[in-house]
Length: 153
Image (tube, rainbow, N blue to C red; front, side, top):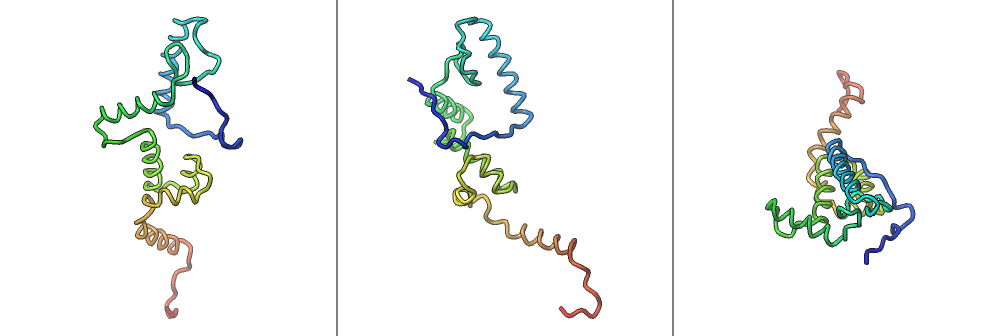
């Protein structure tokens, strides 16, 4: 039997921003879901108001969601072993590699601290020393007075 539990810590409920394309997909999904609600009428399980459910509104089991994602990954010919958790990890890695701030990614992933994110995702933030040097030079150029003739270097 499926059991709903509270989060590990009371303050762990959080909002996560979604892109416009994801919001569009969710809106299309809600429209299909509304059709199922109409078809099932009073037998539709609407009390939980879940997003992803069986056509009659009953909750999906977490294992079936993981299995469906794994099957989709195989169909897409992604490397063997790719799972829902792997996709979550890839999301965090790509955000950091693209320059997203560590605290933002840490909060998005729900980590208990930025240190956890840094330890797990250090591979995605290594090798950016050249970028750091370039940004430091830009900062100096914008914020330090120009060298005057005769200044000691």
